Image 1 (cartoon, rainbow, N blue to C red):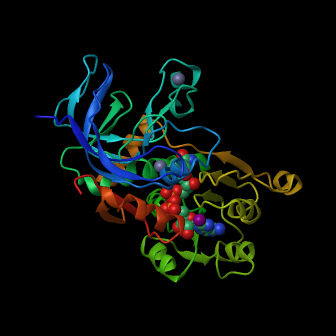
Image 2: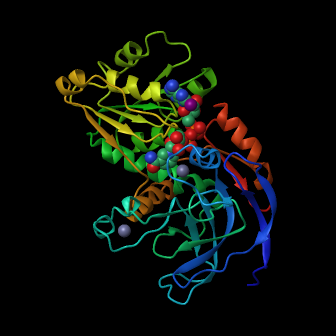
Image 3: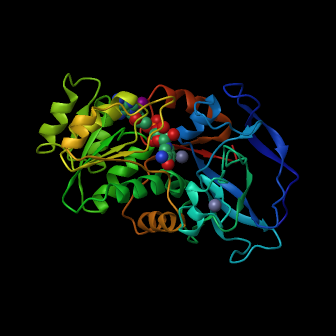
Length: 348
Ligand code: 8ID
Ligand code: ZN
Ligand code: ZN
C-alpha cells in the first residue's frame, strides 16, 4: 500500500483562529503507534470547545482536531502487536496513556495524568492519515460501515459509560438533557437498549420528533416550558432516577439537580465553558443525590459500545459532508441546529 507524503487536513494555528483546509505532511507512526487512513470522522462538540479554547487545559498549536475517526490501518511502528495492515481501526479521544500509573493500572486510563488526547494534545482525525497508540486505538470489526460507526468512538462510548455511571436498574426513568444532539441522540438509544425509560430535553419541535423517533417516551422543550423542573417531574412520575447532562448549559445542570428524584444520580458529561454545578447543599443532602462526573470510557467500554452498535441496537443518525466543510459544521453546532451528528468524509 503506498502512503503519500502529504495529505489534506483542517488545521488551526490559534484558538478561535481560521480553520484552514490545506496540505500537511502525513505523520510517521512512532514505535508504539499505528497509522490509520481516516475515511470518516464524527464532529463532536468537544472539537468546537478545543478550537475556541474553552477549557483550562491548553491545546497543542497548531492543531488538527477530531477524535471520532474511523479508517483502515496502513502502517505501524516496530513495537506494535495485535494489529495488521488492512484492519479497521478508530481514533478516539484517549489517544494514549502511560499504562503504569494508579489509574491506568485499574483501567481508568482516561484519568491518567499523562493522557494524550486526540484532536487536543495529539493531532486528531480531521486529516486523511492519523496516528494512534496501538494499545488504545479502537478495534472496529471488518465490514462495518465506517461513516456510521464513527460517532460511536466518542459519543457512543461516552454515553454508554455515563449510563453505567448512573448505576440504575432496568425500568428506571433516565432524563437526558441535550437529547437531540450528538451524544444525546445516542444516549436515548443506549438507555433504551439497557432497559431504561427515557425522557428527553432539548429545544424545538423538530428535535422533539427526532428524540421520540429514537425511543424517548417523553419530550420536554426547554425553550417553551416555563417550569421545566415541574414538567420533567410530571413526565417521569415524580422525577427521573437519573439525569444524564449532555447539553452545553450550566443552567440545565442546575435544573437536573432539582428535578432528579430522591436517591437518584446526576451525571455530568457536557462541559460548558467556565460552568459550575450550583445546587443547594440542603436539597442534595436531604434527597441523597449522587452527583458524579463521567469522562469518555475505557477500552472495554469502547468495545462494548461498538458491539452494541454492530449488533444493530444503536443507529447513528448522521449527515455526511466533506472535511473541507468543517467550519460550516462548527457554525451549525454553535447555533444548536444539528440533529444527531455530522460526519466528515476525508476524501472531500
Ligand atoms: O467524556 C465526556 N464527558 C464528554 C465526551 C464527549 C463530549 C463530554 N462531551 C461534551 C462536549 O464537549 C459538549 O460539552 O458533551 C457536550 C455535548 O456534546 P455533543 O453532543 O457533541 O454536542 P451537540 O451535538 O452540540 O449537542 C448539544 C445539545 O444540547 C442542547 C442543544 O440544543 C444540542 O442539541 N442544549 C443546549 I446547547 N442547551 C440546552 C438546555 N438548556 C440543551 N438541551 C436542553 N436544555
Ligand atoms: Zn467527543
Ligand atoms: Zn497513566
